[in-house]
Length: 412
Image 1 (tube, one colour):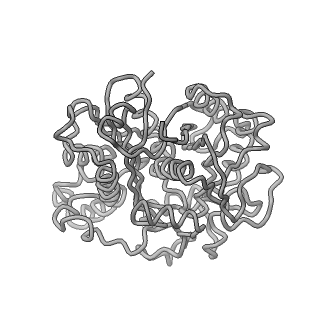
Image 2 (spheres, helix red, strand yellow):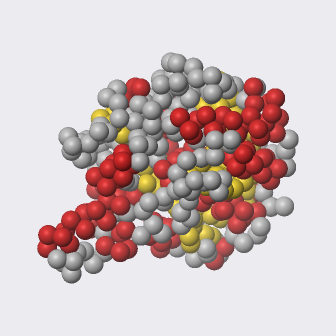
Image 3 (cartoon, one colour):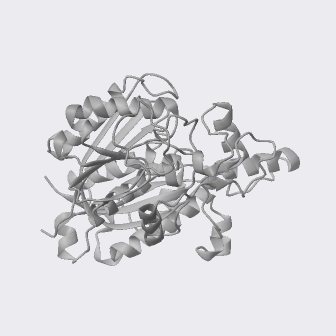
């Protein structure tokens, strides 16, 4: 079976504008959550989000280019350029039809949809932008990136709500492992901190409505009261091992397992028994060809909603049995907020760096234990510990579950 390694990574998110800044912030336990600045929240119950700080698209993109992209595509392009450069791949040296792109988004160009609808209502719908459709559709980030770097293999956008980024990475992994590709650029991006996005999640009663940024995204804490919306992108370059070795590529980690299931339970609420998520983790571990006891760390979906955190805890106990008591299970959404379709890819990056640097990130701002969430959630302080295997969970509306398993790379 072909082996798959990670040779490039890029990101822009609430705690960093690139990979280096992001990992430094994660290790320090920096909270990227604050009061919303990009829209007026006077009429909203929700005042807090995980925004990309001091974002100016013209620092990264040509002005004309930026105007023709929704913000989620901008983020994806920025992270992809970093990941591709980081990988050191030269497209001219590759068979372009053996190189693919899977870049997901849970929602796509909602900011564009909102702006163009307002324009249509006031000026007439034949006066909206001719770029409205390509700017708003969820597959356009994948298309724009493939065009830019010249990858001509599979080009897809998997839409599975908050599991989208993890599904993109997982499917790209299998694509290489099953010999359909040698190189895949994959991940997710989201940018829906806008009136429609904030309003839509607020009326669902999904978001935290508090006024203290340090007590807003508090996964597994007894006082948790909803997730905090984040924005940004995470992109990875996956490569077949021998292909990477041949060109002398640096390797961050090996991707060894992927599982995906559906709760088939409810359009938004997870199955409270945790059975669907547990089966997903079990499938990923089996796909990796290891025993459950080999997993040292799980980057939890951990959204800071009552149902998610309790259900995910139950799922981990089902999947790992007695070993669940020994697992370290933290949620870095305590720092970044929830990037929706971009979260799984960012958390895949965090898992890879955790393995590489022998450091397990914390669940920050934790104060009040919840008996329903009684695992070792690495409260408040990260740990310098040598870990060999890490898993990342993503659980999305519609009952979508995805789990990725990574192995520490030790210069074979």
